[in-house]
Length: 328
Image 1 (tube, helix red, strand yellow):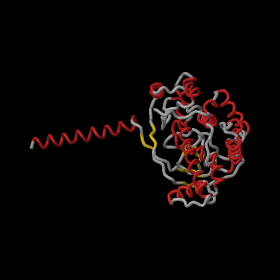
Image 2 (tube, rainbow, N blue to C red):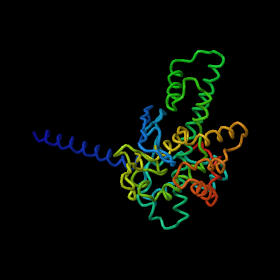
Image 3 (cartoon, helix red, strand yellow):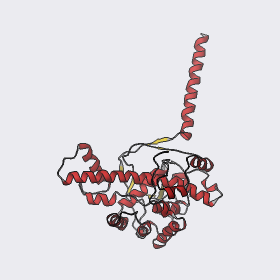
Image 4 (cartoon, rainbow, N blue to C red):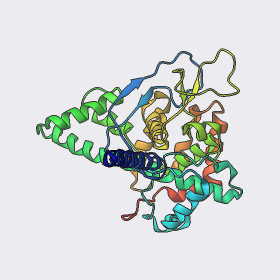
């Protein structure tokens, strides 16, 4: 009888230890991000000259393999983590292929408490840059596959069923007619890191805004679906928009890129990018592309000037041709 009591206590102790490990791992062990090919279309309830960057597909997930993301709760710990893996922005800009594959899922809660302005800026860029490269890399891989399928289609080769389904889903994602390869390649394309960084800096205040800290919203994307975002404190009576929240930072980055690639308000952006791809083998010119983004903000042309100013004052274009390192 005494042995049975001891066994029960032992089982309870084991269960307690296992549950404790699982709980702690949620905070300190990399978590898995799952993607699916779901698209939910958002509806626009009001018209104006200003086109919110989130108008169009309001919720979406892309069908890529799972990736690992890390969450480090404090700025001090995250700075130490970056130092341990030799993640230095000057080295990244010089060596070009030295960005580590570390995907931070949430901004540190105390990022606004970092006293050194240069350290705060550096920390924010180190958090966001790998997420931009990750999203661009996935798109580049997709484009290579799309070009191979386009070639098969051109010579009359039969597509495998899996290839056909994947391709048709891509056309559907962008509301394109099946086999409109030109339209798909025009839309499904990368964004210069300097441009994405500049816009995230403006929209999130270097990661210190309420929307960024509480909702991983670093690009100021709007939603008209109640309860899916944070209500702006200065929202005018009668307005219904919220600033869309995300479970993880990478989702905010991918939504931002998708919006630029999808919405009609950014057609000039896409067409200019396409011409750059055709006419030069160099990097996309983010300054020129910024000129087309007056619809991104109610500030319009002043917003464009601000984006270009942020890029210049922080020398962000040095990150436009950086790549991931082959090691962690």
